[in-house]
Image (cartoon, rainbow, N blue to C red):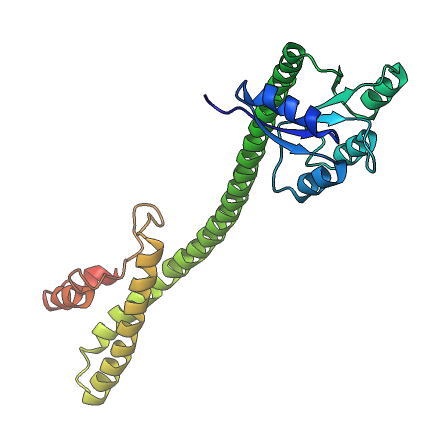
Length: 267
């Protein structure tokens, strides 16, 4: 037979506790008996074992049933455990006190088996519904926490993206501003090469070498920012500095000069 939820039985009369355990065990429930309230509270408050329901005798020496109820209801992790009072007292005030203190139901001794099982089933169903709702609320809270964390990560990512875009825009602007004067300087150096003075030619080579190194740096920066030549002053284009993988600009320009096209380029 499938075992049902665990039930604590707290009663100082052993015969009564054993009888209640027999009724419940024969119906598939798991039980654990205690002959005093203090022992039961030690287990409950330790959190090691939490039952789904408690059968509690009100009239016990030492820690009585009312005190047990109060301590259970004052503990946040135990407060929703259903408690059924068991009493042989015919005093209605005692029963009312138990219910007001936090008991959920009561049974009169001697306990009727059918009535016991009916009340246990009823409160067990309510506890299962409660546990299910708590589980759902926990899942919702965890989902909300994950969503909130993800939202925070997205906001941070968006900030980093905006910062990166601003940096890329600035770098692209630098490429834009440096491209034309650097190209103009290289063109001018090519014209100076036409001078027959060897000293001038050597100086031109030195300057040209430095400018070509600057062009390599600019090419890397432009590749990083995906800089492209844009329309500039109507139909004219800003002269793009050639990438290292393309035909070198200076080679083409030298060919233009040699072909007598330099004047057209400068005009």
